[in-house]
Length: 82
Image (cartoon, rainbow, N blue to C red):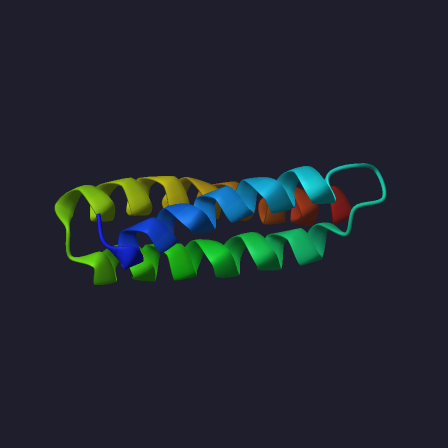
């Protein structure tokens, strides 16, 4: 695994750390959504840049899962505000 593959997996770990830091009733959810989305998209790009099939597979699946989580979080905020 090269440096881009490792950085892609590092983005997933950073997303998990951010999730545990920002949870709670006083958490700013919009900041969390922006961080999750930005780090996840960066992780997917880094996984594609690694050009190793196992790095691409792991990076896209894990970072894609975080991106889907951020989308559902944004969707739930939109539903709760209306």
